[in-house]
Amino acid sequence: MAGDSKAKVIPLHKNSGAARRHPSTLAGPSTEQIVAVVREIDQRRAAAGSPGAAAEPTPSEFARRVAAVVAFLRERVTGDYQVDEFGFDPHFNEAVALPLLRLFFNEWFRVEVSGIENLPVEGPALVVANHAGVLPMDALMLSVAVHDHHPTHRDLRMLGADLVFDLPLIGPAARKAGHTMACTVDAHRLLAAGELTAVFPEGYKGLGKRFKDRYKLQRFGRGGFVAAALHTQAPIVPCSIVGSEEIYPMIADVKLLARLLGVPYFPITPLFPLAGPAGLVPLPSKWHIAFGEPIETTDYDAGAADDPMVTFELTDQVRETIQQTLYRLLAGRRSMFFG
Image (cartoon, rainbow, N blue to C red; front, side, top):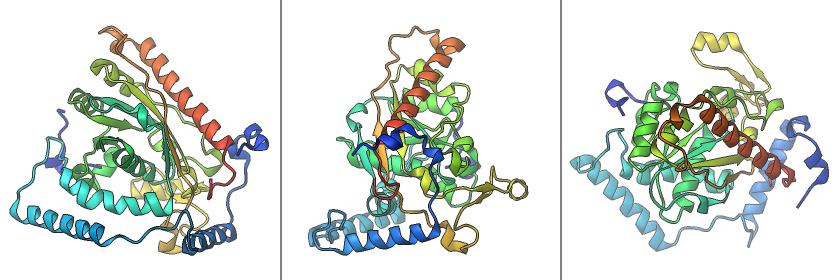
């Protein structure tokens, strides 16, 4: 999520057996199971009256989509659009980014969302979520969940790794979608401006962990996100995401190749790199995004943000809340592909 140097604005049904076992003890999906699941999803959607079947857009909806595209192109040509100091282009987000992501959100991952009422209608809040899946699809799905399910359709401003913002095409697009680098300065500026902000404290340790370690939260860094929330007195909203661990089941990490390519890890999955480009298609796991009750920070004094004990306690509280929610959601899940 950062573009060229000009774009970087640094100043700113209960299963008791499953409940007793940690998810990492369960076997990973075989290629045959994956093919069978994809086929069954297609059959269910093709069946008449299927709850998962996607309705064809009505003429009025189609006309609205065409009008949105025309309006977007007109603004691009005339230059009649605005961006904020981080490069956020709301019209680009609405007309380009979100429609593309909704294909995965609604049709492929079939994401369920709960606890959206725990996000404020207005004003700042810091959403803290678990991170997994080799590629940061969880961050993208989280942005759609907030925008489409929140009563005021708020934009989620995510804090991402520097590597994302240094990628051609992807970096500038991430900036236009409203995201910026994961640093305390930018987090503080976004929250101080009243933005709904998201952070993934596990970072690469969460994204690049093996499939056998799925849903085991990694260390949450040094608590910089807590300090930013304390400084701005923004509530912290724990967020637990189930389903992202299965999209690219990572069975090995070729560290030598990773070093040669300058990336944090080089994943080996059941389909990548053996299946070539087809291995880049994420598996159609069933997702659930749950927002927990907010942790208020208004009761802390002005010096709390600089107190290591306070930030450590809050960091540990947020991490434990997310971990226990993950266990609860997993205990009630019968299938990683059907929920």
